[in-house]
Length: 356
Image (cartoon, rainbow, N blue to C red; front, top):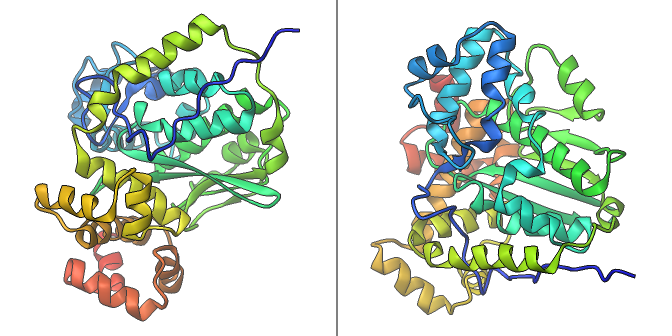
């Protein structure tokens, strides 16, 4: 019998969040997941060059899967594409053509695991190999697990298509790991619904909830028990060697790494300085010293993350203030409103009116 090969588990406390390649900019993603866009535009009779020019995105961005695209550029590119095609579920059409193979090294690490659950955890842990602008969190509670996609890049606009696309890719990834029979229990989006829900319903084959406080694929935990095929030991060693080769880049942008961790921990609800320091494999005093070297305070970074999440939810959803407050772990809407006014100079309601 062939022995199953499993990738070594690398804990965040020993391995800082990674960036892909030596020039991976903070707030960017490998363009691989967006490679279906030219074909989708062609289906609508729209020229890619015209969309790239209108969005102010360089013409050679789609020349190779390892090219990087900043999230602001991706957001503008998708927004212009929606405008030109008159299709407000365009992100779905792009995402449904991408799979685990589009995740590059992060996807390879996932396939080196022993089970679908371990593979999914590996993908989430090393997601920054693919994307330094967003995070992927896997949260299990009893019989159900959810995979949460969260944008970590600051000041993002035009996120609805990014969220649609991310969940479509996540669905395909789950089928790659768990088999074609995989079905989610519900899919939630921290954005408003597209005008035509039928394509989304047909693709996900599950209840859809828009105007949610998070973008997530929820499913029965039992799916994660599926065994994965064994991986050739030589191939596994090559993958691990490449991961180790990129470790040096992991510490090159400490503020961005910390922001990613805080965004993930905010989803989980465990974002104290002590818990984050533990994840980084350091003492609280060491974390404080590292922050001071960058002219930062822990509370300021945490509040900046909360501010960006709040702005996204207020802009892209119709959530009530109490729901936004709860998603940011505030005890009341009043406390959230006080904090938001301190961050922006306006109330949450006034901000929502301004940006719509």
